[in-house]
Image 1 (cartoon, each protein chain N blue to C red):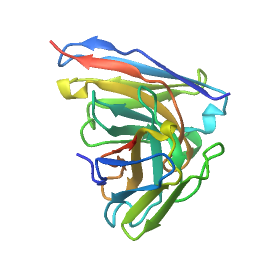
Image 2 (cartoon, each protein chain N blue to C red):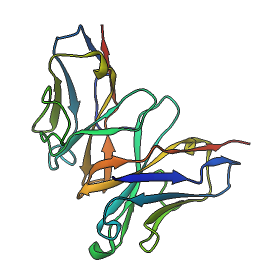
Image 3 (cartoon, chains in turn cyan, orange):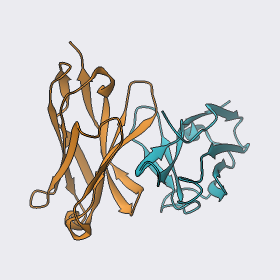
Image 4 (cartoon, rainbow over the protein chains, first blue to last red):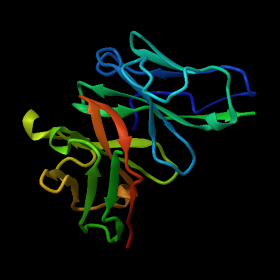
Length: 110
Length: 121
């Protein structure tokens, strides 16, 4: 089972902002950087945010990441219909000596 | 252009074996750390394991559910990474993705489209 906990869903009308939380522990988020992945329906995951808050080339600046202690957050500003997807946080876990994903959050644009 | 193309998936009986391949192109494979990630039907992402580049020791790490049953290897001459899966269980049924770890130890910037593995009698 996932060791990083996310809310199962988040939603908002177009143009609104939503925030997805990711709760971990001292062995993962507390001691390593957090990455976020976006998975559009029927497609492979895509790197959205790396190293807590870095956007890869091509990712709109509407997406932003932050980390504090053993938790992290992904904010999506100005929701657009194409943002409907599943979002996963992830981090290396020193205790498990493995990479762990969050439970995933489904974003719906109302 | 970076491309990762998985192959080798299929239907296998419990206890059986399967070998997945991931052919890479568009980057210097010999320097690349590679990972496998799977996704069971309707479920979230689960990391399976990784292999470091030969320059970093070429060692492997695995998730607990597959340790001892799965083996990741690489052929740098063919720009290919493999996932040998033995003693397969029904819970191994999933779409298996390979990914390029572009920033060690864990940033997976490029992913393949996946290959489906179904374990059923």
